[in-house]
Length: 183
Image (cartoon, rainbow, N blue to C red; front, side, top):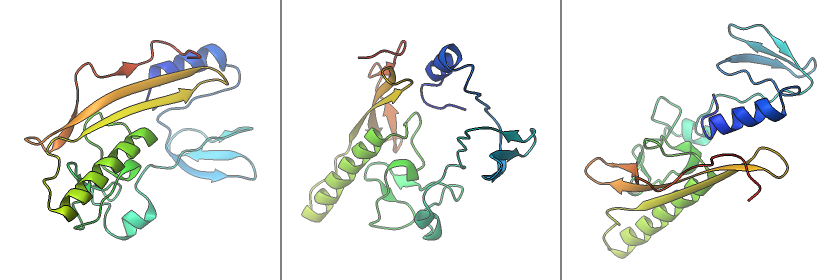
């Protein structure tokens, strides 16, 4: 399913692309024949189309899986959220789409950038003998074009809660677009 800004995407698609875009959620692809432009599904009938946008199962990159860093269902990397240090390998920090995210933490370029800043501060603190920030804060803003001019967005702020060893969304810190707009 569409995990970010889903209702906005689905409404815009239905209102503007119904005659050219067919969205098929909950279909597990088992194969693609590029020559015939056909995708095979586990349960549903095969689909032949002029254009296919087939998304593979999401997981951390091959290097994370092969090195044993992907220790969450062999798909994602568990980390200490205060520093983003791997729980599988000391002094290895993992950020972005490769990690098993905290509750309600989006996977976006902006969020990966925020992860990187927390890692940099933690590494500098460790190397300098300083205290690691006990409550790092992450921010996220993600804009997605639904046409050549219109966008939808989501924003949020997440603060590390030491007692729970995870990030929690700061109440009232963000939200989702009410509707697509040019601004």
